Length: 160
Image (cartoon, rainbow, N blue to C red; front, top):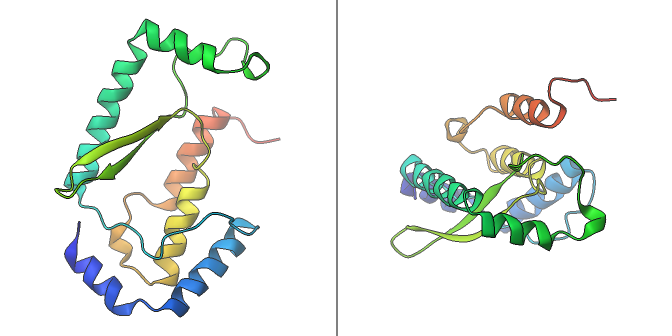
């Protein structure tokens, strides 16, 4: 964790700001967000993030190299949701981690669908804006993120 950012956030936090955060998140999403959002963002060091990336890549490679896993996961998808000519590797895959008391990442789940790819950057920007967080905390500029997501989904084509 980044203690200096945690301390600054905690010192400036108020329940009123959290309510503003929730209203602004709803506004930016264009709908009421029905699940609970944390009062605070996580302030993780590059070292912890790099470790999670490494673990996620390793786990993904293990799964994709296992014919038994691939066969079982293919059977888990109901026939009406199977896609013809599906790529052998998922376009979207994310590993969710928790942290133990030593801040060691522990796998919670691996998902192969893009449920949060639009939500996460909106959430991050809302935290930054409402709580006036240091812009240096950005791991990627939001415009670059949207460009990469658009390229991944549309493959260079313009939306219809």
